[in-house]
Amino acid sequence: MIKELKLDLLGKIKKPEFQVRRKMLSKILEGELASNTKGQGIEFSGYRKYDYGDDASTIDWPASLRAKTTLIREFEQYRNFQIYILLDVSDSMLFSSTEQLKVEYAAEIAFSIVYSVVNSGSKVGMSMFNDKLVTKRIPNSGSKNYFRIIQDLTNGKNYGGNFDLRKPLSQSRALLFDKSLIIVISDFLGLKKGWNNYISMMSQQFDILAIMVRDPRDKEIPDNAGQFYLEDPFSKEKIRIDTKEYAKIYREMVKKEEEDIQKKFLSAKSGFVSVSTTEDFLKPLLKYVRLRAKILSRQG
Image (cartoon, rainbow, N blue to C red; front, top):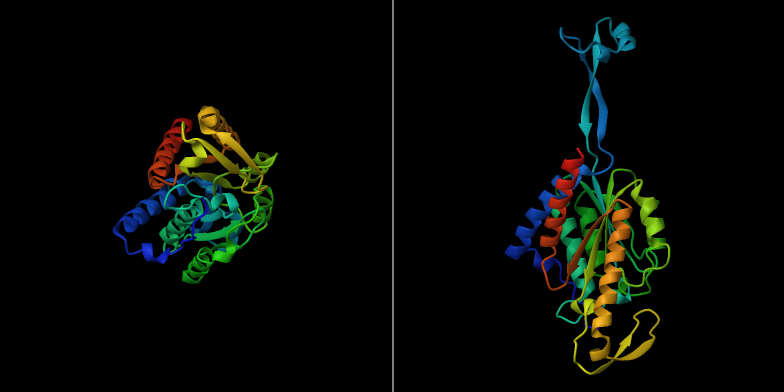
């Protein structure tokens, strides 16, 4: 069922539970996830005079000759970390069987992430998409970028439309540099053939985390609620079903579909988190981060 779009995101800041979530998100995004993001490395930081016991292989002889004293090169680890959110605002996200539309829940996730890192020095950007990019905010730091993203999120004209993940991914690639974490927030309903090839291509250069947002009705229908008309949000095609006959088939079909989506993200070495609009998204995200940390520690 489509309801009125409610986007009072700034009003949530004063709530105590939001501030608790912000602190946890900051720890996750700036800590566990950032520490394992592609693009970490060692970069040259400067010279200093050679001291007895220093590694002789670090001596820069050309620089030493110019300075007429023995100099060694010093290096430091760097992490130029930035977050880019891809938020699905297509028609299937404008649905709810509860009090909150999927897109409202998803927008709250995006807003929480942006708010959690805006003052940390890390860069954050966001694009809203349907079958193309509706808005484009490249990763940047500072309050101006933050307020531009808020304006995008609270503009009702940015919501609705068809869905195709492939073109938005291709368009996003041109906006980003290395060392980016791309967070795709979507229900992933109506995926076109070959979508996973674009994920595989992007994951070679960037880290990708998929957050799949589903409404309870996306997962199951009542077992004995009579006959209903179901409508495809994109093609508008309708079909009448008897829930007693199709409830089990529907659950099994959805389970298989979700497992396939997750498998394709994991095959592309991307992260995957499934959340429901009836739960706090922070819990599944924390579970994913802890599992990822264990896997990486075993590999290390």
